[in-house]
Amino acid sequence: MEKIELFRLMGDQDFDYDRYYHSETGQVVLGLESPFSGTGEYSTPENQKYWKSLGLLKEVHNEGDITKHWYSFLPIHAEGQGEKLPLVFVMHGHANILPVTETYGYTHLAAKYGFIVVMSKDEHPEVIDEMYAYALENFPVDTSRVYMVGYSFGGFMTSWHTLHFPRRYAAAGIGGMFAAGYGIDSDDFDDTDNPIWYHIPAATEEELKTAEALKMPVMITVGEREILQHLPIWREEKDEPVIDHPKGAIDLSVENKLRGLNIWRRVNGISPITREELGERIKASADETEKHIGYSFDKTNVEKIIDRNYYIGELRNSAGIPMIRIAGIEEAPHWPTLAQCELTWNFVSQFRRDPETGRLEIIGEGIPANR
Image (cartoon, rainbow, N blue to C red; front, side, top):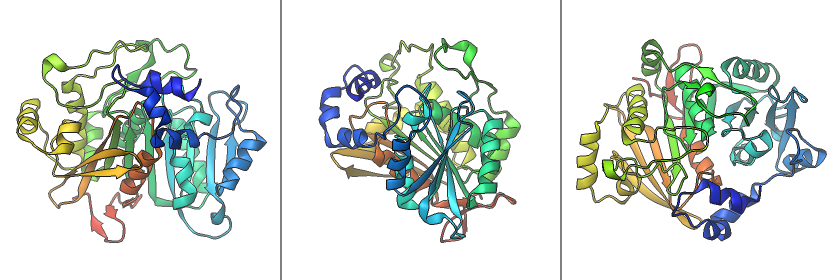
């Protein structure tokens, strides 16, 4: 599929996809394309050379298995140096093949910032466990700096894994999605074009209590013109979007988004907020970021990156530590940008967690973040 057609499909009814395609941001997204065979899931010599030119050694694992194959990307400078590196799980969008997932932007940042990337077609917990075990045995992994990031369905899976297994991950990065704590059952969707079906449960109260004790910093990034119409979060009931999604019903109500965000607030030691409270704050606010995102924050700023604004708000715990950060991207569709990935990395990489004790710290300061 041509990228301009993808942009059209991933935007809402008011999205100017042609303008986005020809914008500087759109051209940067196009520039993330890596050489690969569009007819299959696997790598080619041309693809391998491309990543090597960027400073990464790419390896395809379980090649030939349409559901169990996965990729790893190791910074070349790490070979034989003995230096421990962060490990980042990158979770893919619905039915995205891995040659597409590797173009989101995180892989391009791996060589720049010196972290290992792994991504799998199958994102069930037992598969992630196998990948993690392989990484620990074969790569120089800093086990205190393991992160998970994802986009769209991958954002949902990121929230699921990090809330179910918080001791492993130091922080989470979610793009194009607000869900948290939910389960998913592929039987509820017309999911025939996806070779992997999921039947995974919602987080239990006991699991949420564990996550609450350990904490899980999270950054959420969404575009203003996504097909899923995530922004603004708070709206009058008459203005709530009704989406005829091709894969079945997706609850995009204000109540459901607030439910997910309140789970993240609870897990990170921040009091929940009701729809009524949020509505009063938004109506009274003159803050540009709060208006664009439709949410109330402790601190906001607007960052101009290339040719558009990133409206960024953060929520802080009682110790003043930013545990939740949300960014709304001006006139952007349901597709990641490189800047979006970099903002997410800059946030999550502040944190590390002792895998034995679960203690969460801000790197360089030794400040406990899970208190």
